[in-house]
Amino acid sequence: MSTAYAAATESLRSHPRKWVVTGCAGFIGSHLVETLLGLGQRVVGLDNFRTGCQRNLDDCLDKVGRDAWERFSLLQADVTDLISCRAACAGADVVLHEAGFISVPESIDDPLFCHETNVTGSLNLMLAARDAGVRNFVYASSAAVYGDDATMPQKEERIGKPMSPYGASKLMDEHYAWLFAQHYGLHTVGLRYFNVFGPRQNPYGGYAAVVPLWISTLVAGGTCTVHGDGLQTRDFCPVANVVQANILAGMATDKKTAGAVYNVALGGSTTLLELHRMIGENLQAVNPATQPKPPHQGPTRAGDIRHSSADISKARAELGFEPTITVAEGLAEAVRWYARKG
Image (cartoon, rainbow, N blue to C red; front, top):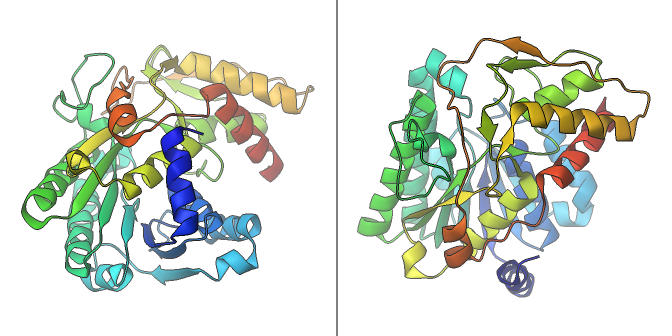
């Protein structure tokens, strides 16, 4: 645990706060809820259950216990509804905004819905947070804002043109957040996530992320599809590191962090073929009889970027962010979880 994160968690235990977590029934949101309740916080969750699911909240309950769960309240609503956003933010100290449209391919199929959810929804929540006197507003941005910029590693101050409506929507969120920090005094912090993975991530559907999709496919004895040659790279980041970044951002008080955005990743690079091999090795460690099938090569997907790797020095310097879980450790945990769930 980093020094800054240790100090933040100790402060929270001593002086509990009220947090809003949007997308609370989703993959990242449910991990935030679990951690915050474990730290003795009060949490209001908001979710429309389009992509989130009750079993993620049930898993949280199992982890934290009934007593901690009494400090959680759920508002089943959509961020596109301003009235619901206002209800969620009433009396809150910090907002962690995770709800959103999360798929690059799906955003190409339905750009209007992507915009309504990610841009209008985020604007609604910022308005509600501003009017409720929320101290810190942390929101999920994405490495997709880097678009066609080929510079590696990717640094916050240099971005290209987004290659999908999803990337464009996240970039618009960043612009609005900066404006709210400048004009309204809302302490906004954006976190550009790089390929987050871990337990509870949805492995199903046509737009599933690669890590849960491939793990569940190999657990079932199937064949994974690599879109392209498999040499494209990603900065895969275990979800525990993302939780740390959110809490640090939610506790940030330095003026230079207001309106800022930060890369949240490991600062590494893994090819898709390496990822497939690592998943297979972890499955064999869980069940030595497993014989993972080699991947099938499919067509390159529209809107996908070729390479992605983050420079996380800004988050280290200004937030005290220090990743503690490696790709290998995160994959081992994720494979064990999906193998148990079948």
